[in-house]
Length: 586
Image (cartoon, rainbow, N blue to C red):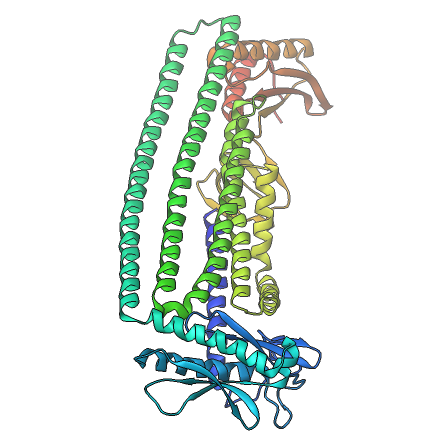
């Protein structure tokens, strides 16, 4: 799990670095336009297609003229269509160039309006038989030409040149008067004061949210401490009850059966109660985490609304108000729902894991195995969900900034193929590790055999499996090398006892002695807890020149086959010696 988290973090770090690199490359590419030839790398650079913000209607192209104050649309201008912007016809000006020139003149008009003592006037004049709109003020003697009203403008709007010029004159005059009003000392200081009030409100709101978050964190810490105390108390209670039951056990088969059943039921109840307490803790911690998450987004939303409100009030900042309203809001929506979906996914996984680990028909040993396995599987799935939705959010973020996500995906696919070719063994390890966990082939604490290696599973993750053999050696096996595995301690184990006795012995006597040894071993409380059922004397398994081979099967609890086998062999040896049973000397 640790290696998987490191692998996931490496992927996320790689994606973020790639995005930053692409952004820097795209941001710097505009500097070298005059030094390098233009390359048609995107559809927006196609000289035969209108640029963004330009609408083509047959022989006309339309663009908007925006206010220099807050970028609101004032009116639309029209120019003849330019089908190849890399080689425009002589005397033809693309509509976006014309719109940009008008915007620049309006920016100069904004400066002259701020300096004028009286409100400037927008008037209609004739220049070279064209109707123009010009700005006159008390600071300069020469009017500032703003807009030339052309025949395509009048044709598109369905008005005469005079009517359209008068309409645009009213629009521009109203805009000039609005600018003059907003930049007057009284209104300007009033709006600056409102911005300061909003700023103070943001600071106070941030302090309140910080105090609430600190309170939630304190409660989370206290809840975790109380839960750990409850877990310790439950474990101590289990130990005390087990000791009391062991000291008061009656050495009879019937009483032992009842005691064993009660003990298992009690242990199972205690274990399930512990899991329920843990799930209840996770649920309460999840509520606190949700509240903390909501406070975080409330903090961001509060500052977003506050900044937008300040920018909409202060005239010097109004030109960026539209940009601050659109893209940041889209980013907030994308990442809010991305984080919300991730949280919902993790919550659903926790609930499914709880149902999986508390199934009433599952034995206690299996419940413990499932609890350990479910934690690993759920952690891996949570990491995968987080990676998928964060990638989804990054791609939509790139779309907002008009970055070519298709090219990035194609490049990412190429890089992914290169990485996969270079790390096939790692991918095989991860895939096989997932299958081992999902199929529950083995778990930590099992004794397994893999090819010629065997030992106790000491560590298991998505990358490797580590075994501790009889000599104490730690054996590390990549999961991709695990083809066939033998689990010696899954649910139950078995002692396969076989012994060869001489032909001089009475077969019935030999079998009877073995049955008595099995019955005596099964009747003792010390060994009864390790034997789910009575041992089976199968009988004579083989006849050969060396003697008679007798086989006994002893079903044991997991990990108990070795201790039970050693004890059974000792008793068989003593019983055979006491009854003069001759074993084969060969």
